[in-house]
Image 1 (cartoon, helix red, strand yellow):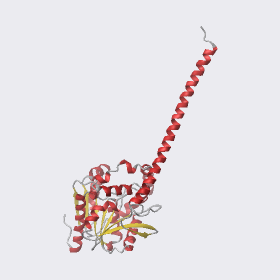
Image 2 (cartoon, helix red, strand yellow):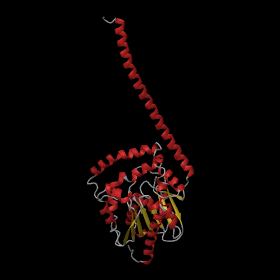
Image 3 (cartoon, helix red, strand yellow):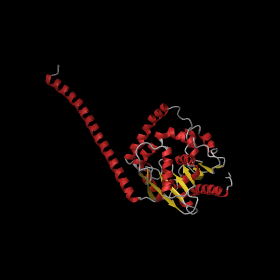
Image 4 (cartoon, helix red, strand yellow):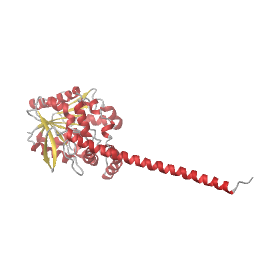
Length: 354
């Protein structure tokens, strides 16, 4: 029997209705997904902004603020005596990372830790921030604060590289240095400006990822216990986490390190001949595995750093990693002891001994 016209029409209409229904529900699902996503993003931005403001109220500067090159820089000093010890934090890190070492050293002499622009309680600056500018600003900061030179300097990670550069730029102001788990810079990493520009473009994606995570408040949520696991007291760990999770930290790290990596290599290479300057080189044993897996030149670079001064001592702090070498009271005490050894070598004129 031939189907009636009405039956055929109903079948065609039902098929169209089914198709329209699938498309309708797909569009509606996509619309609500977009609404939920935008809402979550807005909530993340609001959460981050509110958390930053609350952190500002909860954590006031521990030291003094000084005007340097048109922006305020933070310096916190403890103890009395000479020579003064100046502490430099690592990349995307604040003066508070030196909490344990600074408190231990304060029983022996004056010890000062500072924040580079954009970290801790120092104001951020716009644009690129190269290594020579950083060392120049530190020099001005110490002069304004009346810290008497010459002093002993200690730097952790990227701060260890800056410490070498500072000693090279201002040799009359530095009588000894301590390099704590120094950053590994690969010599001749770029053959030309175009090579550097290509690398910078490729690394921009990673910076964008960290930037987005921070601005959405996720950085402070992903691993809130990392600093307490490194050995810091709970209240200090919470404070470091708060300081570390601000938007300006990501921007400042990009401005002073990634955009200037090629210039950093040149400045660091120029700071490889330090004469007989007393120099202690400390390494965290647990940092080596990760570094060596990423940088095949790392063992040779580590060995080479010990040759930058004819009066150097090199030690490995067993069990320590890149964070706990300062955060753990036990490991921090070994860093403190190395600083005191350098001071003793300066005062007695005796060479350092392994």
